[in-house]
Image (tube, rainbow, N blue to C red; front, top):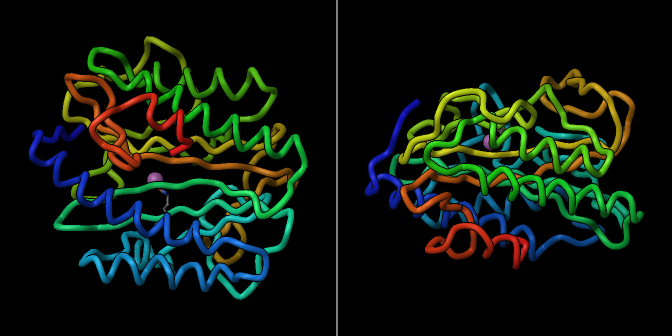
Length: 261
Ligand code: MF3
Ligand code: CO
């Protein structure tokens, strides 16, 4: 595990701020009729104009700035010319490099009205993210974070996706350790100040495996059930978890929960 000095974490906050601005610009454009390719252009514009570069584009051949994952697609959907429709959900995942550091963030949005159980899936997945973040304190173990996420998800009767996990992040956007969204409390490596994690629960509405389509990326639930995905970049600090991708980065927990950051 790579531990960052406080000055490096401040640099990661700058990357996270650019990344967040890109997501907010996309968020402002979400509406029926808009294509995910248009959203991709909006995000890329913000990142480039800010002096950053898209972290996903070119990573293992991924072709875009955003992952746009609709409905049953869990992660890694590729932006295209399909317009968003009322009743869709779309996970927008964006990563940015800025002055040598990476940031990574995702949120799942409802386009217009969606069924109550899908709304509950979105809310539960976001709540599980914050439950995991709360455990990202020095002296806790990685399994405490994983187990907290899994508990929230399973209490609602939903299914934690096993095929994809969160990750450490820093000068590269995938670093050790893996951060599973399932596991046992009290197990795994001890968390230390300076560790920065991309925590990203991916949840399906019922038990299913996740497959990858022939494009090599798009990863839908095998059964076709809906899914959700929320992600923050979080630093473990002496003062507790610091959500680098939150609206305000001076406080850690609570702000995000209150405002749905
Ligand atoms: N947040 C996702 C992840 O950490 C997005 C990666 S998209 C990729 O894996 F194209 F860059 F792989
Ligand atoms: Co990630």
